[in-house]
Length: 93
Image 1 (cartoon, helix red, strand yellow):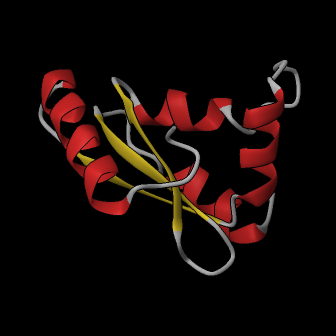
Image 2 (cartoon, helix red, strand yellow; image 1 turned 90 degrees about the vertical axis):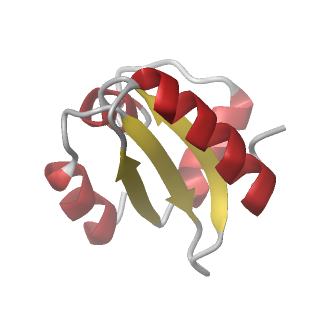
């Protein structure tokens, strides 16, 4: 995990929203939703968690993290679907 990601993780809100994992070129490689952004996004970087090979590959590529806060989990669900259609990230298969 690089310094950019470490700093962003410390700034994550405890609100519902959609998060974007980006690679070193700034391209969105994964879009996800969360009821609590702080909890969900941090899970990717916990050493104690067991991950499948696809998630391991994703985490190895993450160079930046961004997010959008929304009012509810339902709104996060709809926004996630829209962002996946818009950006077509390669890890959202």
